[in-house]
Image 1 (cartoon, one colour):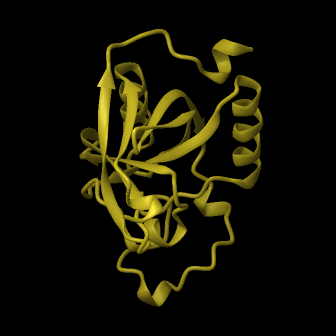
Image 2: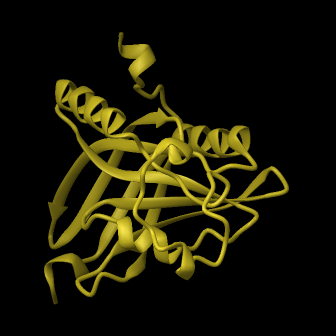
Length: 176
């Protein structure tokens, strides 16, 4: 079995799930996005990612100069159908994570009025090893929450999610 085909589990707290869903609801009808910070460990061949903090960012799709072929897109290329995390936000999240002894372990975003299934655009821009949480939001209400990860063939596969009891979570705002 290839390196990226090992079993993976994303563990998060109910507070994290609630925060992601609230962000998705607040941004509707546009896509929300953010980074997931935590630790990755391998135990007996299973990769375990523990989400310890969320790094919420603005969807900067409208300001991004993204080279995507509009002719192959099935929907308008707007923030309602795409997300973009500004490079400075990515840098700031990495810097903050390092101060905590963490890493960026993934990205979350929403799919307004679509399923919580990665699009072709999501796949093209995905990075191996990251978890990709997608929240489906129908008519402004979050209703599905799934995590995905790229395999060795650069295709998304579902990633197991374990939801832990609520605890006080760490965020940039609470740590400053």
